Length: 172
Image (cartoon, rainbow, N blue to C red; front, side, top):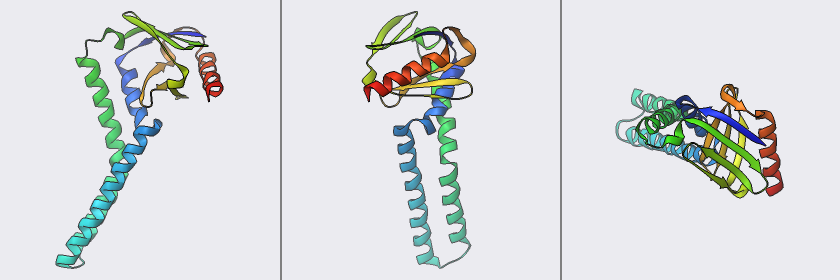
Protein backbone atom coordinates (compact mmCIF):
# COMPACT_ATOMS: atom_id res chain seq x y z
CA UNK A 1 0.00 0.00 0.00
CA UNK A 2 1.63 3.23 -1.23
CA UNK A 3 0.85 6.76 -0.12
CA UNK A 4 2.35 10.00 -1.42
CA UNK A 5 2.02 13.29 0.44
CA UNK A 6 3.43 16.80 0.73
CA UNK A 7 5.15 17.72 4.03
CA UNK A 8 5.23 21.30 5.30
CA UNK A 9 6.57 22.96 8.48
CA UNK A 10 3.18 22.86 10.20
CA UNK A 11 3.17 19.06 9.91
CA UNK A 12 6.40 18.83 11.92
CA UNK A 13 4.95 21.24 14.47
CA UNK A 14 1.83 19.06 14.71
CA UNK A 15 4.00 15.98 15.27
CA UNK A 16 5.94 17.79 18.00
CA UNK A 17 2.72 18.75 19.78
CA UNK A 18 1.32 15.22 19.39
CA UNK A 19 4.50 13.65 20.76
CA UNK A 20 3.98 15.29 24.16
CA UNK A 21 0.82 13.30 24.85
CA UNK A 22 0.73 10.64 22.15
CA UNK A 23 4.16 9.01 22.42
CA UNK A 24 4.46 6.87 25.54
CA UNK A 25 8.21 7.39 26.10
CA UNK A 26 7.91 11.19 25.94
CA UNK A 27 4.69 11.23 27.97
CA UNK A 28 6.40 9.16 30.70
CA UNK A 29 9.31 11.62 30.85
CA UNK A 30 6.93 14.57 31.12
CA UNK A 31 4.96 12.80 33.86
CA UNK A 32 8.23 12.21 35.74
CA UNK A 33 9.04 15.94 35.56
CA UNK A 34 5.52 16.82 36.69
CA UNK A 35 5.89 14.59 39.75
CA UNK A 36 9.26 16.19 40.53
CA UNK A 37 7.68 19.65 40.34
CA UNK A 38 4.90 18.61 42.68
CA UNK A 39 7.23 16.92 45.17
CA UNK A 40 9.59 19.92 45.08
CA UNK A 41 6.70 22.30 45.72
CA UNK A 42 5.43 20.24 48.64
CA UNK A 43 8.95 19.95 50.08
CA UNK A 44 9.43 23.70 49.78
CA UNK A 45 6.07 24.30 51.46
CA UNK A 46 7.05 22.02 54.35
CA UNK A 47 10.37 23.84 54.80
CA UNK A 48 8.71 27.26 54.70
CA UNK A 49 6.03 26.09 57.14
CA UNK A 50 8.70 24.73 59.51
CA UNK A 51 10.53 28.07 59.59
CA UNK A 52 7.73 30.62 59.58
CA UNK A 53 4.62 28.64 60.42
CA UNK A 54 1.44 28.07 58.47
CA UNK A 55 0.34 31.14 56.61
CA UNK A 56 -0.27 32.71 53.26
CA UNK A 57 3.13 31.52 52.01
CA UNK A 58 2.08 27.90 52.37
CA UNK A 59 -1.10 28.48 50.39
CA UNK A 60 0.81 30.37 47.68
CA UNK A 61 3.43 27.61 47.39
CA UNK A 62 0.77 24.89 47.28
CA UNK A 63 -1.17 26.73 44.58
CA UNK A 64 2.00 27.43 42.58
CA UNK A 65 2.96 23.73 42.71
CA UNK A 66 -0.50 22.65 41.62
CA UNK A 67 -0.49 25.20 38.82
CA UNK A 68 2.92 24.05 37.56
CA UNK A 69 1.78 20.44 37.76
CA UNK A 70 -1.34 21.21 35.69
CA UNK A 71 0.30 23.50 33.12
CA UNK A 72 3.49 21.54 32.51
CA UNK A 73 2.08 19.45 29.59
CA UNK A 74 0.82 22.62 27.88
CA UNK A 75 4.18 24.30 28.31
CA UNK A 76 5.93 21.20 26.94
CA UNK A 77 3.58 21.06 23.95
CA UNK A 78 4.41 24.68 23.09
CA UNK A 79 8.12 23.98 23.60
CA UNK A 80 7.97 20.96 21.28
CA UNK A 81 6.23 23.03 18.60
CA UNK A 82 8.95 25.70 18.87
CA UNK A 83 11.65 23.04 18.79
CA UNK A 84 10.22 21.43 15.66
CA UNK A 85 9.83 24.83 13.97
CA UNK A 86 13.44 25.73 14.85
CA UNK A 87 14.65 22.36 13.55
CA UNK A 88 12.83 22.97 10.29
CA UNK A 89 14.17 26.50 9.87
CA UNK A 90 17.80 25.69 10.70
CA UNK A 91 18.19 22.28 9.09
CA UNK A 92 19.72 21.79 5.68
CA UNK A 93 17.96 18.42 5.32
CA UNK A 94 15.97 18.68 2.06
CA UNK A 95 13.75 15.80 3.15
CA UNK A 96 12.00 17.87 5.84
CA UNK A 97 9.75 19.49 3.24
CA UNK A 98 8.27 18.39 -0.02
CA UNK A 99 6.99 15.23 -1.59
CA UNK A 100 7.27 12.02 0.48
CA UNK A 101 6.31 8.46 -0.28
CA UNK A 102 5.61 5.71 2.24
CA UNK A 103 4.82 2.15 1.33
CA UNK A 104 3.67 -0.58 3.70
CA UNK A 105 5.46 -3.69 2.44
CA UNK A 106 6.00 -7.17 3.83
CA UNK A 107 9.64 -6.39 4.72
CA UNK A 108 8.92 -3.07 6.38
CA UNK A 109 7.95 0.53 5.79
CA UNK A 110 9.64 1.90 2.68
CA UNK A 111 10.10 5.67 2.70
CA UNK A 112 11.47 8.08 0.18
CA UNK A 113 11.77 11.77 -0.52
CA UNK A 114 13.61 13.79 -3.14
CA UNK A 115 16.98 13.26 -1.46
CA UNK A 116 16.93 9.66 -0.29
CA UNK A 117 15.12 6.47 0.56
CA UNK A 118 15.18 3.55 2.95
CA UNK A 119 13.21 0.79 4.60
CA UNK A 120 12.30 0.70 8.29
CA UNK A 121 11.82 -2.79 9.68
CA UNK A 122 8.36 -3.40 11.17
CA UNK A 123 9.96 -4.17 14.54
CA UNK A 124 11.00 -0.49 14.76
CA UNK A 125 7.53 0.88 13.96
CA UNK A 126 5.80 1.68 17.25
CA UNK A 127 2.34 2.91 16.26
CA UNK A 128 0.15 4.86 13.91
CA UNK A 129 -2.54 7.10 15.37
CA UNK A 130 -5.01 9.41 13.71
CA UNK A 131 -5.99 12.97 14.52
CA UNK A 132 -8.42 15.17 12.63
CA UNK A 133 -5.66 16.57 10.42
CA UNK A 134 -2.90 13.93 10.42
CA UNK A 135 -1.98 10.29 10.73
CA UNK A 136 0.93 10.17 13.20
CA UNK A 137 3.39 7.43 12.35
CA UNK A 138 5.81 6.69 15.22
CA UNK A 139 8.91 4.53 14.97
CA UNK A 140 12.03 3.86 17.02
CA UNK A 141 10.20 4.85 20.20
CA UNK A 142 9.97 8.63 19.77
CA UNK A 143 10.66 9.50 16.12
CA UNK A 144 8.08 9.77 13.39
CA UNK A 145 6.21 11.78 10.85
CA UNK A 146 2.83 13.48 10.58
CA UNK A 147 1.05 12.49 7.36
CA UNK A 148 -1.23 15.42 6.49
CA UNK A 149 -4.71 14.34 5.38
CA UNK A 150 -5.18 17.47 3.29
CA UNK A 151 -2.00 16.97 1.26
CA UNK A 152 -2.20 13.30 0.32
CA UNK A 153 -1.50 13.30 -3.41
CA UNK A 154 -1.71 9.61 -4.18
CA UNK A 155 -3.13 6.62 -2.35
CA UNK A 156 -5.79 6.08 0.26
CA UNK A 157 -4.76 7.24 3.73
CA UNK A 158 -7.34 5.06 5.50
CA UNK A 159 -6.15 1.98 3.62
CA UNK A 160 -2.51 2.86 4.38
CA UNK A 161 -3.27 3.24 8.11
CA UNK A 162 -5.06 -0.13 8.06
CA UNK A 163 -2.11 -1.77 6.29
CA UNK A 164 0.34 -0.38 8.86
CA UNK A 165 -1.85 -1.53 11.75
CA UNK A 166 -2.16 -4.99 10.23
CA UNK A 167 1.62 -5.27 9.87
CA UNK A 168 2.04 -4.11 13.49
CA UNK A 169 -0.42 -6.81 14.66
CA UNK A 170 1.34 -9.52 12.63
CA UNK A 171 4.72 -8.52 14.09
CA UNK A 172 3.46 -8.34 17.67
